[in-house]
Length: 183
Figure 1 (cartoon, one colour):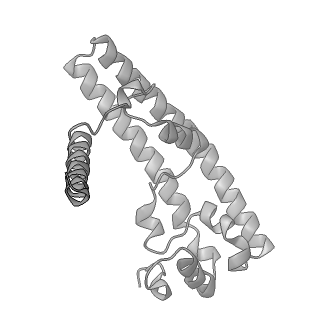
Figure 2 (cartoon, one colour; figure 1 turned 180 degrees about the horizontal axis):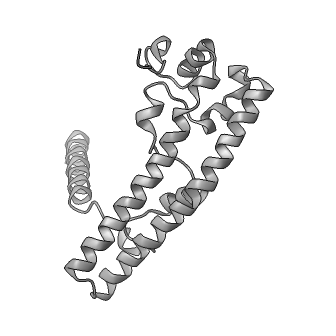
């Protein structure tokens, strides 16, 4: 074989291998998840729930001009937050963690219980419905808690701080990154 034929053959083999790997990954999206301690939660999700992190639960608020206390504290210097503003956001952040960490622990416990019941093959349809309803209620409480802290932040910021926050977070049209209040 000539060098160009080898090059062509190797390129074809590389494309075939890449296509095969992509197809295998697409048909096995849950590969390696069976080794998780709780199948429905990644290690990162468990860590986030235990730490009271938002996990994008408050995007409806964040992306509509209601910053979260954690992000405001991260950007405190760039936003020129006053000592009083920092104090208020620190109090909010601490309160949010006190509220969300126990709820996150409940969510982890309920997911672990559901996982154990499936693993033991002991779950019934009624138990499944009750477990999923309980999980839904916990998830709703967790999301509402995170959203509620976002709801109260705009009143503590100046319009300039709100505008600058949107810019710092990279939101398009940051000048319009203001919450809409009813007339």
